[in-house]
Image (cartoon, rainbow, N blue to C red):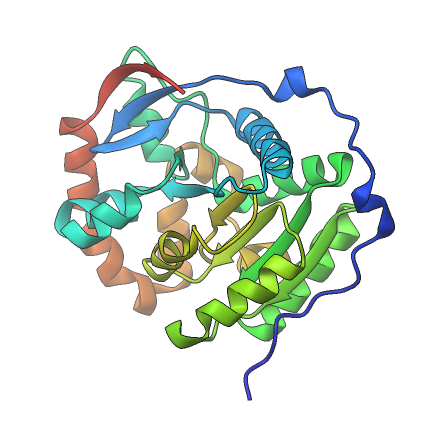
Length: 282
């Protein structure tokens, strides 16, 4: 028997109006084509404020579908160029943010550079801080049962007041998705974090956008393992230089060697040849 979505009682205060400075969340932003992928020119702080705005808007409009928020890095850029089906799925996102430092570097060749990297492993903390301050509710989906439960524990402990109203491990089949979406909807989340690995998490988000009721569906890869400390981040200087992939490769050579050997050269080529400014605002 599969494990059902685990959710606690929602605190009574979640029904109370949230006092927020909506003007601080009301950001517009430009986009830039990076490696052939249309990417938002948003800082981590700007992305967090966009989350707040979109989630509050969704609360006032129950029929609104959640926004899909995907992360662009070298792996995704290379896959999008190689696999038409993946590219179609990836481009269904409402917001694509720069998860990789290389995307930020490439955007500096244009008139509309991305202000900074918004790695999902960092952004989940930015989002948790904003959510705790303003009463947004999270649902955490994906990873193993142990990693999922520990990530929820760490986030609650680190950000007092953070409402994680539902969680579930990521081991399920497509035939279970209808029931899982119904269970998620019962928890009334504002943000659903989807950590199912690439490309499964993107496919899940696109398939279930019309079923789920939330402000955001955010793909987050293996970030729960970083939250728990099971995976270690690269030193700050390696992150700043765009070398976090090398740190990960040294840590997990058997799993990651062929991935980086194939995707890195292609991603670099695409970043150099398919990067340009756009003049549209969102």
